[in-house]
Image (cartoon, rainbow, N blue to C red; front, side, top):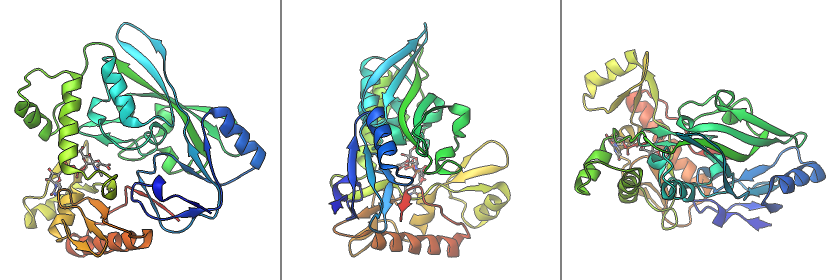
Amino acid sequence: MFSLKKFNSFGVECRTPYFKEVFSFFELKNLILKKKFREFFVLGGGTNILFLNKITGPVIKNSIGGIKIVNENDNAIYVSVGAGVNWHHLVLWCISKNYGGIENLSLIPGLVGASPIQNIGAYGTEICDVFHELECIEIKNGSKVNFNASDCKFSYRDSIFKNEYKGEFIITNVTLRLTKKNHKINTNYGEINETLQQMKILSPSIKDVSDAIVKIRSKKLPNHKEIGNAGSFFKNPIINLKVIEKLIKNYPDIPVFPLNGEKVKISAAWLIERCGFKGKRIKNVGMHSNQSLVLVNYGNANGAELWNYAKEIKKEVFNKFKIQLEEEVNLIN
Ligand code: EPU
């Protein structure tokens, strides 16, 4: 049996009978065809998963590398990236070449292959804003398939790969469309401007924005190499205007982020904090004291302990606010 403890950012123990790391599309294809696996678990950076049990099927670690320019014009550059490339490494590479578009996504843990699956987002940017296309392998027959942005059906922390096509494809390569000049500097998200002011920067470059975000994230979010966690454990709930109007009457300070149309997004961190869970530790498990949306493993918690604590939060939030929190992290059974 192979231990996956070092391969998940929660640092929980999980064993598997078969583990294989692959470094190219062809290696992956051969494995799929030769072994005739219909179902297996594909591991990227392991930074957005919670193992609840041992894994009975095979585990494949996707380590396909490479960053290359595949097209360009006066303004845009198309960069094709292997699924196994570390996301923040890609961000730094783009900044060093002055390619703009993903600087707001600095320091997000994990690998490029997982980034479209949950449409990673932070500080006012989502990967769908710069996504061009992706290449993947269809598990049932090993064929290569391309998806463009509309095929992926991106929405908040969601895509077709979490729904209709769950478990059907493995992403092998992602192509982003980035800017070579006239970068769209986006400092609208609250703390960015404040941090840039502290840094005494008036006219920020993409590198300045990245540096500011690295500062903000490092201050608020625990480093999973020190304390096990997977970033935000829940999604921010999206609710109807009617529901928020009622809530605001009782809780006028609830943070609300308007969306287009009839819905708003509200802060799950705030709901959790209001239920008294911020910094609350029970044995080896708790919600982080700087960010109440981050479930942490302080020691040797197992998947079930973490999940039981999360379920307790869901129950309390529902009892108090009648709002159902939904996991952002993928639960692996
Ligand atoms: N807040 C609290 N208590 C807290 C933390 C935050 O009440 O402990 C309130 C504050 O009012 C704050 C608001 O929540 O203004 C928003 O907080 P924050 O800016 O920290 O963002 P978030 O909504 O908690 C989301 C993403 C993060 C991303 C940040 C910044 C989700 C589920 N999470 O968190 O993404 O880094 O915005 O854009 O959308 C992740 O997905 O793993 C992740 C860390």
